[in-house]
Amino acid sequence: MEISPTVNTEENQSTRRPIIHVFTGFRALACLWIFMLHSVSTKELENLFLLQLMPLGGSAGVVLFFCLSGFVMVWTYGDCKFKSAKCYWSFIGRRAARLFPLYYFSLFLSIYDIRYVWRKDEPCTKTNVIFIMLTLFTIQTWVPYNFGRNLWNEPIWSVQTEWFFYLVFPFLLRLIRYFLNTSQISLLTNRNDKKKALKRLYLMWFLVLCMSVIPVPFQFRPLEIGEHKRTTDPYDLTVILYISPLTRIPEFLLGMLTGIIFILKSSPDTHINQSDTNVSLNLVSSDDQQPDTKFSSSLCSNYNRYCFILDIYFLIGILFFICSSPIFYFYEFVEYHAILRMGSLMSFMMCTYLYLSARYPSSLTSRLLTRALLIKMGEISYAFYCLSETLPKVYSLLVGIMIEKSIIMKLFAGIGIAVFARRFIEMPFYTWVNKKLLRCQCR
Image (cartoon, rainbow, N blue to C red):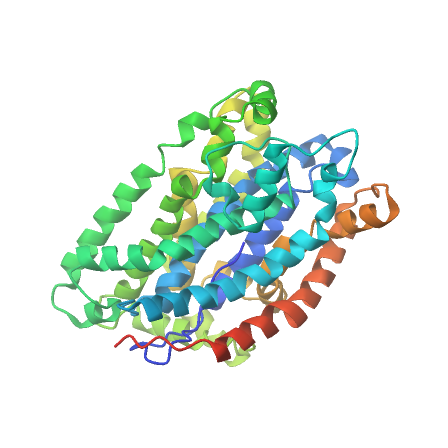
């Protein structure tokens, strides 16, 4: 899963906003959360039943990524008018440069997943070929069809869905600004009708949140029936609705709306804790910088009741995700486990976490998420997400047997290849494309 860089790259942006470092920490949290979900079959978790159930809420990490992506897109490109095709394709080119190098590198390392193409006992079918082609064109999740057992580096389905979000983002942004009666988000911060704009944003946020409930009831299905249908029915709505960008776009939209609300509420002429806002701006800088320790005393002095409420809310959320899956299982509510995978509850929680942690950087939650270790993990999160599952498959392809799965070995191997891929594949290619592509000329 990938989100855009939080520093504007467009030369003529009217507002160049700094990075919100706590979001980098959230990226680290989300990718580790999803990693745990994909590691439930490892030997450490298989031997302990309760530990195997706890990561099942990790699907909410995908919701966090989608909401975070929408927030950061608005924070970065909210003032770009996208009034010309040249500007649109400049934006798309940069997004593609960020997503695709690691996407295709992960497919290359996971070539073992499509071994049925050359196996005599499992001949390649038309469905196999269609799946491979759609995956190569990054549009497999766009097709309302369940390809069953066809998997090619399973985690990257969300990259295809994210790519759809990037393609429609300029149009969504212009639509939101149309309803707000403005051409640039930054113009609203100094207008007398900001309160009216905020009321419209709250209404849009609520309506989109209600829309996100629609696909959830189709996910309510007993586990044993759902697992069987998942591999046999090509039109099983459980899978199709879960990965489809059309059903996941409310999460991205909620992130966008939350980002706009944050921009307006954090402007100087609103009634907020101004000193806390100043601290927030001091904690943001370039990708290679960390929050300076000289602000630590300022952070402590700005700790207030809102920071305390955020910390309690975050702690309750952690306990909820740890305990919810075992509770669903023991009380035989497994068919309702979908509320932890997608929908309004997850979207509400993730958007409020993002907003509050960015708004109140003095909180213990925000300071925890901006620790150096989580910042470094957040920087390699996209590479880790794409590649953490690939090394065992490379070994299997070369040796011909599957190695014993260990979550500790997967974690360290995933971090190692993620550091390599970010330094030698992701960033060099993205930097080169930024030099070659024409800058957006929105004014």
